[in-house]
Amino acid sequence: MTAVWIAASPFVFGVQDDPVLLWADQSIALTICLLAGLSYWRPTRHAHLLILAVAIGLTIWGRFAELPPSPPHQNHIVVGLFLLMIALIPNQASQPPNAWRRHAGDGLS
Image (cartoon, rainbow, N blue to C red; front, side):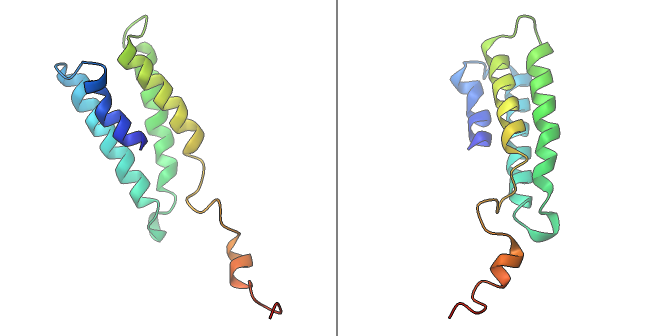
């Protein structure tokens, strides 16, 4: 959903005529979707950690692109900070550890 917001934000903030902001936001959204999707595939399950780099870049760009930051860049800062918070959470964080799931029925019948 964060990627959808980033993709829609140029239209929300009325900067769709700025090709730099439009294409940057679209490519950032695509990168977030790609990394989030790859994190569900077992061989690339740590791909969500690369979102940290995207988040740091987004935050720095939003802060220093223009001073003081305009609303679209303030959005980049907020979204970057949000991604920093959630990018560390693994996909299966709400499930019990694998060892517990493997032994979930041993001796409980």
